[in-house]
Each structure stands twice: as C-alpha cells, then as structure tokens.
Length: 312
Image (tube, rainbow, N blue to C red; front, side):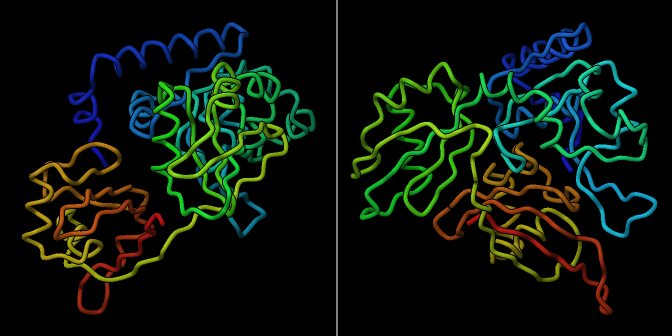
C-alpha cells in the first residue's frame, strides 16, 4: 500500500486543486445539491481517498450471512451529511467521477424506510439514487468496427485523443467482440458520434447506448500464482515479471514500476492484498498491470504465497 504522506508529497498543483474542488462538491451535497467532478484517473481517485474523500466499497458480512456483500454498511452512510462515491457508468469502472449525494437521498432505499440498519448498500444502488443526474453526465457510446481488423485499447484511445478530446471527458474504454463501449461526458458525446469515423485502419460507426441498460462484458484477467521469499516489492515484481531480483530492483529504481498508481522508489516497499502493480515494458522484461489478491499466507518452507490477476 502506498504511504499517504508519500502520495501527498508527490501531488501536482492540479491534483491539489482537484482535492479542493472535491471538498467543495462534498460541501454542496451536504447543503442538498448533487455534484460531481469530471472523469478521474485511478491515481486521482487514490489521492482523493487519501484525504478521506469518497467511499470505497468493501466486503461486508451481515450477522445472518456467510458470504460477504460488496458495498457500504447503511449505518455508516446514514451517519454522514453527504454520500460521496466513485462511479464511471458501471461498478467495475476504473475511470470514475467523484459524485456526492445529499444524505436525504438514502430515504429512497427500502432498507431505510424499513429501518434495517444492518443492510448493505451496493455501489450500483448508490448510483441508482442519482441515475437522472448521472445520465446527464455519462453517455455510453458503442463504437462498432467492421470486425476484420484487430484493434486494441490503445487504438481506440489514440483515435479519440486524435480528435482533440481531453482525457478528463472520457471514462473507460471497454473492448467487445465487435467494437468498444466508450463512456464519455455528455458534452462531448455528440462530437464523438459525428466525428469519429476511423480507429486504426478500420472504419467505425458510433451510436449512443441507453445509460440505464448498458451491458459491460466482464474484464478479462489471467490468474498467476507463485511464492516469494518475502512480501517486498522487488520480490513480487521479480515473480510476476519473470525476471531476476536484481533486474526487478533496477526497474524500480529507474521508475518503471508503479504501486497503487504512483511511481515506486523503495525496493523493499511492502506489498499487500489489493495493491495494483504496473510494470512498464523494458525490452528484456514484458510489462503489464497486476492486482494483488493475496500475499501473506506462508508455505511450510516459510515462503509467501502470491496470487495475482494480470490484466489481459
């Protein structure tokens, strides 16, 4: 996990302004007005959360249930003046808005009306409380390809940025079998529909999808398992990048490794479940983005079991 003080030391002036803006949005929600930022990167989201801005869904186990439900305890939400959360058009979105609802919006939930303080509210249920406002901010677009050309996320991103569009008005780009779903700010959606005609070497057609009925295919991961001598960053990078420990240390020192969306500098930085490790391609070593699922259980020989999901 990235150290909070280190995060704050590495912030840019723009990121400090973002924190101020997000606090203002929270204050407006406490006064009864829904408000939201533009699309944020995972790094920007991490920064806001380091300042206590925005809630992150977590597993919650009710007294009468054996399985955890991912969401927010209702009692925790009800104690707040505003409900701040991150939403990008679907629950697993990486690029999200920071949204803030007035606390009274919770009274639309059945659990509140029924007095069920043990209920767990999912992220989708929170977003549904502001579906009218969010549908005015987020437009899912379907970019249909011919199907004859193999296109990557980078191809779609390059085509969109090539139109002069700022990244802050674009959310996730989700690849599908015959194109991609692009989550965009409403003020730029019509421009994309009218002007995006080519992606890579392929001709495309763009249409708007129903915000309330968009179906996003599950993200593809490759599961990797192994063991490391210790839960240090250099050991984990060595394992998941299939390189020597010394090469891993060199890559970290050269700034080729990010931990939780910030450049890593300490080779002995502790790694824990939930961390996101990004490794830039470096000729000898293939890069990639990885989510650490577990990194604490010991084997009989005293090594640490490692379970990781690699983005495909």
